[in-house]
Length: 467
Image (cartoon, rainbow, N blue to C red; front, side, top):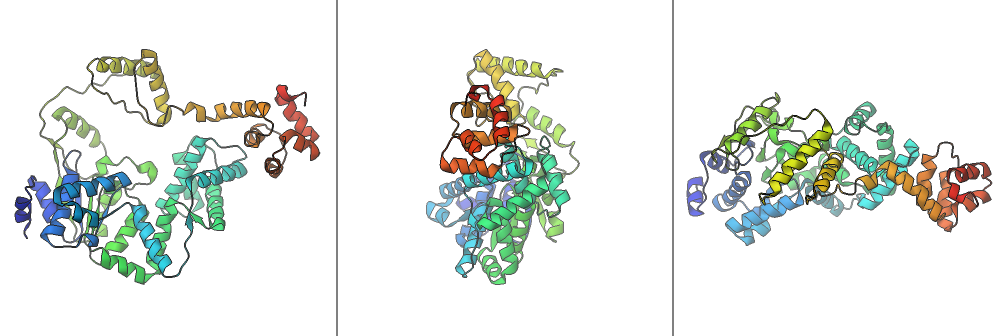
């Protein structure tokens, strides 16, 4: 069936650029889709054309999306357009789901693979390693930062200590951690425990594809067509896996836009879209440049900003929604004035009865914004940032002193004090032994003949001096 006949039969409304993307099915193809250009509709229509127009079995098409939610949405959209039965047969996956499938094939051959570590176990492991290497009890932000650095190292396939340290300083510059040592210790502990994390799944799957030609051939034969959504957010190791899988058929279809990449801190490499023709000689590059979502003022403002980036393909955004309000820039030389200004604007917007979005750089930045809104009595929703103050190092350190003063058997709180007080020489193992015995930490240290250290602690905690 021709693309024209398919589009007519299923009543699809596609503009010329969308139609071109749907009918270009063979060989390596890069589709650069600007915001609001109907990317998902086009991708779903293309999948429908492969299945219903070209009679490709749904199981032979791998559609990779960035999140589990996007996977569900893709299958739902396909089912609404072409039927639930076919939708259930589509192989829509995240990269981690794909790697799990590769590892499972490896295990069916009689090999043993590491076990995926639970998030709680991983956090506890990172806390122990951080405490031992940095000699300070980590905050939740420290642990999140460590996880981010470790994930970047694996996604970027970095090996040298200097590069690991540079990544750590770039992503968590407010910490002076020895990132290379922390990373090596983490990997050593994971190997000894027979564990792997989510990023290790990709490392392990790529190694399997390189070492096990039979497994590689089976996946290459199964996936005759590979479609990748949000391709600007894929990392170096993800591109390596996809390249191996598509090497035989060469039918790889990437949909993305380097201008929309926001996940560099998670190791996304949008420059891979700029090098697509080098990786895939003879590749076709298509564009979708019509914006069906925003006004002319918004798209023109966006283009003025985007064009400052030199590492991009030359494309434009053509809006069809007409004109709207002008974009206003309100300069504030003092940071505190920004929050007052935002609160005043939000107060005016609230009178219209419409929801208003406030964008901020990171979770820490959200706190003074929330404070300004609270002072104005304005309701708000801010996922995951309300309790940030109560996760800060200073708050948790102070809380630990109160916790130990109230309950000397609270060894977790004592461990935080252990790293906070300069000159405390008690061995960490002794504290852990006290925890196992469920005994008073101070009485335990007295029994181990560490009176000087105990007296130092007593002077720090006046409420316990009588003990």
